[in-house]
Image (cartoon, rainbow, N blue to C red; front, side):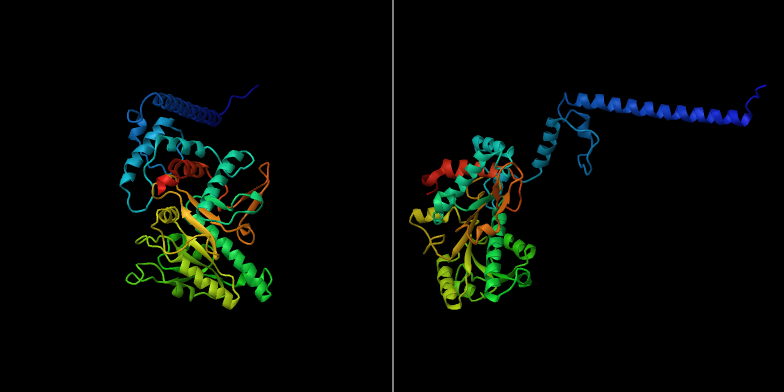
Length: 388
């Protein structure tokens, strides 16, 4: 005969059943909660952000939320945040352009959808970028490239990246020369720390170069009384030695906009190189004056001498593309005198995207908004007559 279960066994079965029911009930509660949240979430898409329950919740998201919001709600949140900034049109402290035409904004949106890193997919955008570089190089009197090629340069995120690219190219050029001069191997020359000579009125970009790329800064303080914040050419060049990768002339400092005498610096460098057998070049940091000085010259109110590639020792020039009525996008440009033993040191050939192209920027992926807007605004819309 079958024996009846003991009271202990019956109690154990009851506990198991209760536990199972509780777990199932919890699952049902969670399911109902999720369904209710989804219904509420779906309904929120049908109303404005201010009328939705999302508006009563904290916007200080430090973690990815469980559920997304509608596009118009997210845009409303960002717009509210933007309202807490100062009015861009009242920004008079950083030289940037803060007004734009509807067409300019439309062009920027087109460029935002294009990753200009992929030359095989976006060849027309690459060509537009190269034409923008050609226009700038021609404006700065760069020597015509061989075999009808494009001028050597790149559009950058801002003038900081342009300065860093120029500094790297000059550093690698110097390293090759120094190793050959002293019979050092590629490994041995890495132990030699180079320097760069510059006015103390330099912008933050050069502080990044000194710290990030291990370059010693040799700094000359300009005189406000004697030079109106323009550096003295002799004092600048006097700090050079055979470990100097370049001398930087600032075409428009951040204090009063005055230009360093690039023409005098070039003459001093020419004499120094001839005397010492060195090969020091000049980089012109034209963040503020690169698109002003040429037109001052055309209007008959230019500098006392040449400031660009007409000077034989100027190897590279950088400029901002978002100042003085230019692009609203953060853009910059760097142009090199030539590719050989200069720009080639920072050119990286990329082949894995379907074609072969050179990348000459610190970052690989980047939107085409800068070149698009720059081409539209400063080069085609304003033209020479508009700038002069």
